[in-house]
Image (cartoon, rainbow, N blue to C red):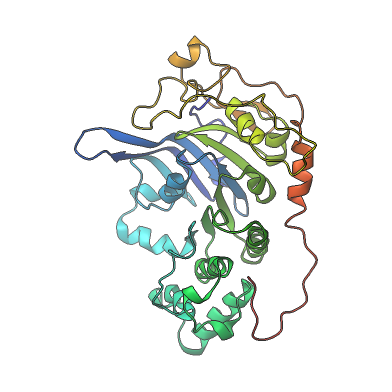
Length: 364
């Protein structure tokens, strides 16, 4: 059941980026109504950690990522970066922190200027912040392009001359060129083919180690999130449902919504029939008028009268495992097909070390 609370947060001094009681609302024309996109959620990420943020479309995960970047500033709550509240910072001071926080957008094609050459796209942050010029700028841009698998020899081309996977690599290069500390990855692989997804996920893992990055990885594919995250937070209709290490979350989901999401993952084995145990019914409530109490209660098979009256709070049920539910599921071990799925999906990113690419070629 979707709720609020801060019991799952680590000590403030341990987190590189942290939000507390974050609220984002959007007005509905002149009606006086509001879209409650994000309602009182709290998350954090330690230096070098990858936080996975998952949920179905419209749950507010992308809005949360943008609110962390102050794009736009949230309606309420705090966003702490290295102990500084970004929400309260004046524009000039916030702008000075921008190079340390970057974002990779969902659609790589539309996030690149079609009229500019790739070299200029990647070099633009360095020019704006006067971090390099002349030969040094060229060397840094070429090195960053090589790090993400793009041959600098083709940097004079424009985005339409590259594939979707290559454009996402260019977006990653643009985010990395200033050597930030935090990158918000807003569904960076959802628009790509499965084979290209694995390449981009491998690239993000490599770049995380090379640049010592902290990542907030937003996605709706739980199998992808499991392979890249150190901690996973599940969202539903603007609220947090569950927070746990990925292995524990997948083996023993405590929230009915998390269990339903896991059951919806297709298993590439015709001998395993889809489970009907956690099939959800009903329509998703409107974020303009969300249900009282627990927002998931209108679709939850375990809902009782209490769920309509009292909003559940985050509480610990295991080591690092937190859930916002009045009647959580009991630990029963992996769900049918979960072990096979994890093994098959985990094998995707693993690949042998490729030989150096010949000059004039680039990755797809």
